Image 1: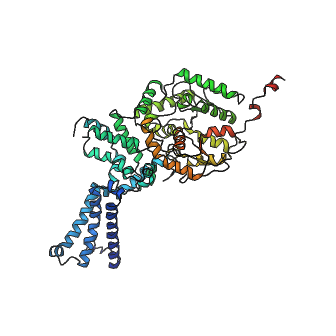
Image 2: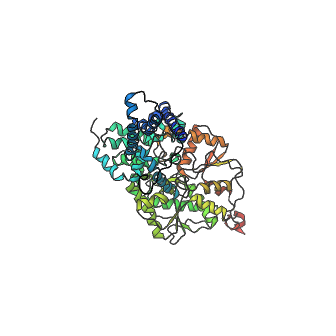
Image 3: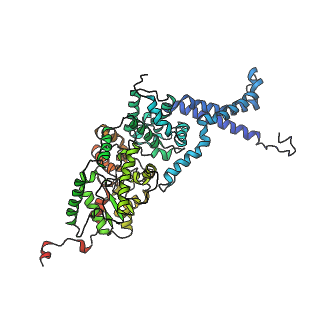
Length: 127
Length: 428
């Protein structure tokens, strides 16, 4: 819309190659975290279903984005027709879930660190 | 699910405490497991996943989800976890990517159980004693004052002119002790009297309640009692018009008076709270205490969680140890990141029921000490010193655990005029 307005602004985009590799990197990391959770006896005891779900929800917009640009799953009729829709919806799902789930840690991280920082800071050292 | 526990009582305790901080910490733990390797219970148990700090505080989220509808067995499970598997040393907090205060969460759970009438007998007894007498050992005022006078007599035989001034108005420092000292370790009082006399300190001890600086109510999170215990001490300090309140070599006493009391009281007391480690460090640094000689055998120093990590004295503790030793050997993780000895968070005063757990979890501390090869372990905390002495027996360590005041008294130079004259000379 900015583009169509009198300002004529537009987002600059990163090269497709970069985007591809960064997406693949993120997916690889997601798989690593899922495996780590599933295989480590330490993590298994503290893991809840939601922990897996959060990784999936985070990875999904990236996976659908990759499929969309490369047409990987286009041979499956439904997915081929609706990948754009799935991509947008999955990203929206992630954004909507942030305030209601553990994904909020991306924002609350700073407040939590600050609270701990105050607690030890008044003892005269930083963590 | 049996309804023999009142869910309303549980929710009534939790709800008012669900501030932004607690809620954030309950909600954002992503179960990453980074806290596992930081816990001495986890390491000592051979990496038992049940000992992961994050797992130990699962109850909070669970209780909120169940709206407090749990049974007695569940509460018993909480009890075992929060008392037998955690010293609230907060080492995990320093390593948590979010800085989630597991110690605080455990403490909240302990407060919940206390509000339901569940707490270790040893601590309950001490809390009753505080309520009745103002000190954990239920000593009467007469016993306390007599003990001091007797200590004064004994110590004055070795340092001429030594006085233990009682209720001296306008003194600079009001010295407070752990009630274990008059009861079991009177030599601690004599030693500190000698140090103060040689350093020329202007000090006093109060005769009325408030002289016991310990606060075991803090460990069961009985905030009302904890507040009144701290209040006693500050009231005495106010009456005597002192500038500083000095705390004996005890960890939780120092933390409770210096860092927790302002929260319980709702205001910041005028008097500065100082730990013995700070005083002794400054005396030696400033030359008010001179040493005849340093300790010759290898030494190391323990970092009690409530003096160091939760008290902020890491540097002075280490420097004091270095100043009095010829061969100081730091432990691995010396300072704020040191391991708990396993005797903290009320584990020592809990008595028999805790013994096997604390001896097991202390394995990590025992190994740390063994690695240094030290023969003397300096320990500025009553709980740590008892625990480390027990660990030495249990894990066959060839060490002696001592308070700073003991070795300083042994090694300090006593000025000419304070050295008692021989019998023969006096007759001249």
